[in-house]
Image 1 (tube, rainbow over the protein chains, first blue to last red):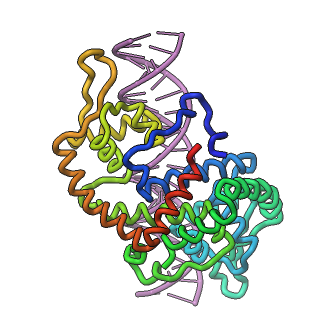
Image 2 (image 1 turned 60 degrees about the vertical axis):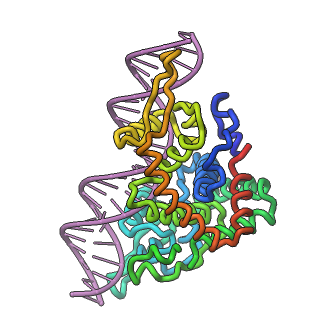
Image 3 (image 1 turned 135 degrees about the vertical axis):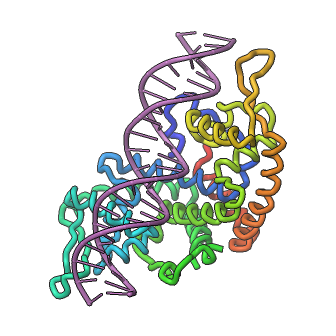
Length: 154
Length: 154
DNA sequence: TATTGTTATACTCTATAACTATA
DNA sequence: TATAGTTATAGAGTATAACAATA
């Protein structure tokens, strides 16, 4: 699937092996960029970046999600979380709701429109994920996920 | 090693498991950010970002490196490669040399100063890489590298 | 004319500081 | 006063277009 993203003959040149090729951080970066690229092509018609898609998924699956919790889950700064939600709210995909009892906490919720867009996008995302599994094999994919988790989980 | 990068009690809260946790692309991104963070802390005193370090390593190990080849190896755009080299040249870490015979191609070379900085930085980078291997085990690290390469190699 | 290198520029992502509002 | 949310802003990283120089 990554080959398909190349756009010119020049880009199709096989990359040379070089002294950074066996650096884990380097390989990690290259793989992440390639996978995000494929993700973005999959969801281009819905105008959903990976972070935006993640927000919709989380709001669909979880209740009682406030800014702080969302920012912690996605490991982004609360300030950037607000900007992200602003964009999604402008598109009527999510809403901010003050809790009636406190007037304080702001509950984030998926709108019906957001739910609809998420369903459509998820079809494409699922196909994207299947491409990854096809590349790695089911066992390879599971193993990769486990190894990646070891790198950032406490 | 990632735990050590946390700076406040709030950040030390264990991240919740959530619906994106089993997405490969998501895990890939999280791991890449964590590893780059550790890399940057390791090389902070040398003011070397991962891309800059990569350039120095490649120029140390390879001959006949021109902009185009370097950009292809690092999968960056030639325009951004020029900017990157500008910064390293201003710091006298690399030089641009016109080939005397052709007056055309520009050969990139590591200066003595660049070589010296690279040696010092590499000590820290090696320690960083050892931390990754300690986390994953030698076998896990090798496996991870192999799986990552499957994701972006043709 | 095609290739290589370069500049300018714009857009996204991320980080910090400072402000508001509520407990 | 502490916490949650927000705005403004600055800094990387990356993309494209346009230009210069050379084959």
